[in-house]
Length: 60
Image 1 (spheres, rainbow, N blue to C red):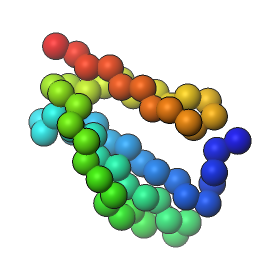
Image 2: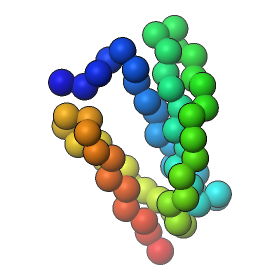
Image 3: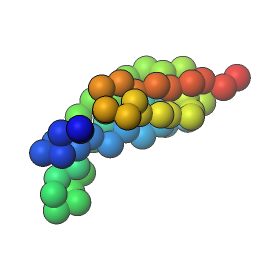
Image 4: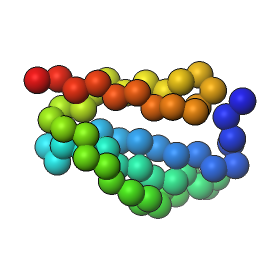
């Protein structure tokens, strides 16, 4: 089961060619964590059922 004490949001930035990560607080506030290079048009994004892995495909 995923850890709901700390939720992470991942956003694909197609223009910048990266993935941005944010922590999500219980009040809905987002705080930036890190950005990771991902290449052009990084989507779709899928999370493994147990939350252990994030899969990203690139188009192009």
